Length: 52
Image (cartoon, rainbow, N blue to C red; front, side, top):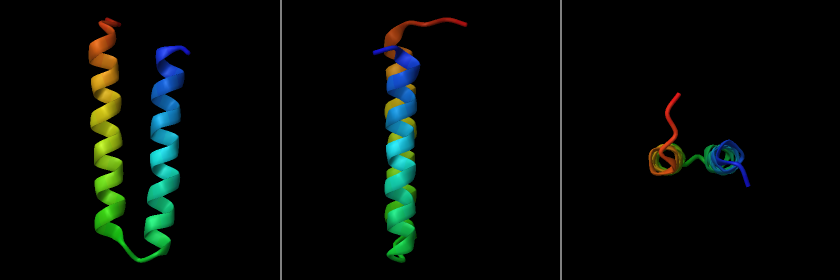
């Protein structure tokens, strides 16, 4: 799978999970979910060695 596809899927799934957490009135968990996904996605990009 292409790097950007993996990054997109990871972020999309995290956003979906965060929306569910917000609907359950858990904004702290939603924020943590998004922060974690952001860090993981950045790490994927850095480890790929891509330079644009």
